[in-house]
Image 1: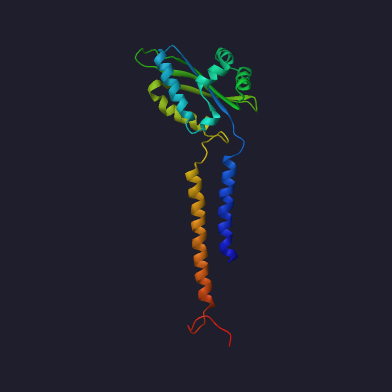
Image 2 (image 1 turned 90 degrees about the horizontal axis):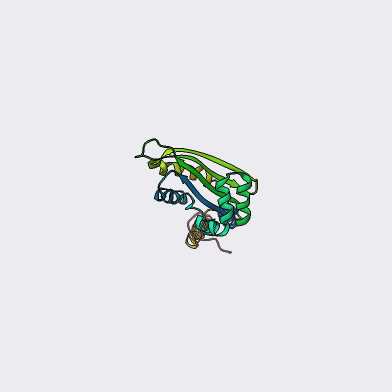
Amino acid sequence: MKVIIRPIAILVAHSLIMAQLTTGQPATVAFAGVKVENVEPWVEKEFQEKMKRIFEDIDPELLILPETVQSMAGRQVDSLFSDISDPSFRRVADQLEAKYVFAGKFKNVSPDNQRIMIQGDFYRYNAQLNTSFRYEVLKYYERMNDETKVIKTQLVDSLPAVSKPASFKQIAMVFGTVILVGILFMSITGTKVWGESTGGDGSGPPSEA
């Protein structure tokens, strides 16, 4: 019976560990937005929406979007876009109490008026380490959807403790599966024990004389 109980215990322990991981210390992420020079206002607005989508897997309660960032730390953000540096990022992070700050500064460098080529840098600042990571961009605008996927993979998906928490339905499904597996194992074990306890002549369970 111990051999059967052991895998059930492992499954339950694994479920509990996963639950603890989803309730660990969260990391607040602030997206300060992007600035794009030499483009029409609608292009800059549309580009900002594209960049917002790289944060779609982050728990909304841990994400501060550009509109809120501007209202809470407008002066610090303006200073950041004037001088992209770790001290400027630090001031924004301190004002927002954020562990990570993202921002991008770009310009259109295309010689062709009919096409837009985006050149610039997208940054991820780590307030705990006081360091920033810079991702260089040089792409025609129509290819930026593919580029944002790469940025998401390299700069966002690696962040700890910021993904959307498991829903109640997902948690219930996990524990329901554990219970069903346990019942199945116990049923198999009960049948096996009963089969082993019967007499060799098929006359049923042994009894006292």
